Image (tube, rainbow, N blue to C red):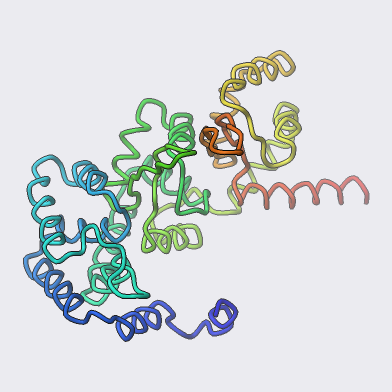
Length: 333
C-alpha cells in the first residue's frame, strides 16, 4: 500500500482512506448521529465544540481535552466543552475505542470533521495566524518544523524555546496551542510518565508547507540559503568547530544529571559559555534539543536516566555537509 501511495502522487489518498472508512463502518446509525452532531456545530459556528471533537479524535483523556480547551479558548469555554463531551458520551463515543470491528472512533470523528469542512477551517485559521503572527511566533513555528515529528516531548521543546525566547517560552507555546498547531497530552505507562506535544495531521501538512515555501507565510529571513550562509560563517569559528566535535558530528545524548558537568568542561576548554553558545545556535536555527524521559524499571527492563538530546536541525546537517565539501574542494584545487 505504501509503495502504491508513493507511486501514485496524483491520487488524493486521504479521501480514498476516508471513503474506505465510510464503506466499512458497521454502525451506520452511530456514524450518522455523529455527522449530525458535527453539522449542528458547523451551522452554529461553534468552534469550541468542534475543537473538542477533534481533540477527542486526537487525545483519549477527558481531562487533557478540557485542559487544552482552557488554554486555547479560555476558562469561559469550559462549560461549552463539557457539554460537547457529554454529547459524545450520550452517543457512546467518549470512552469507546472502536466504532466497528476495524474502524476506531477517532477515525470516524476525523472523517466526519473532514466531510463537513472543519479540518479545512482549522487549517485556514492556522495559516492566517502564522502569516499575521509576530516574529517570535513565526520563529517558533520554524523551529517546530525542524523536529520533523508529530510527537515532541515537552522538556525538550521547552528547553529549546527557553534558549530561543527566554522567559517568553511558555507564553509562546500556549500561543501555538491557541492557533491549533499543538495539542498537549500526557503519556503514562508503567515505564514512562511525561507530557508531550502532539501536532495534528493538518498542522503537520502546514509545517511542511511553511518549510518548503516560507515566503508564502510572510517568513522572509529563513530558508535554506540563509542558513547555509550562516553555517559558512560559523565554520570560521574554532569554538563552533569545537562544538561540532563535542556533538560528535550531528547528535549527542547527555544524561540530565551530567549537563552542568558537560557545560563546565566545554567552557574550560574553549573559554566560552556553553549555554550562550547553544542559545545562539538555537536562535540561528542550527540546533534543537529533544528529550528522552526517565524510564522506570519494569520487569527485566532496567531503569534509564532522562537524557537531553542535542542535535543539528535537518537543514543544518545538509548545509554543513555541503559547506564542508566546498571547503575540501578549495583546499585541494
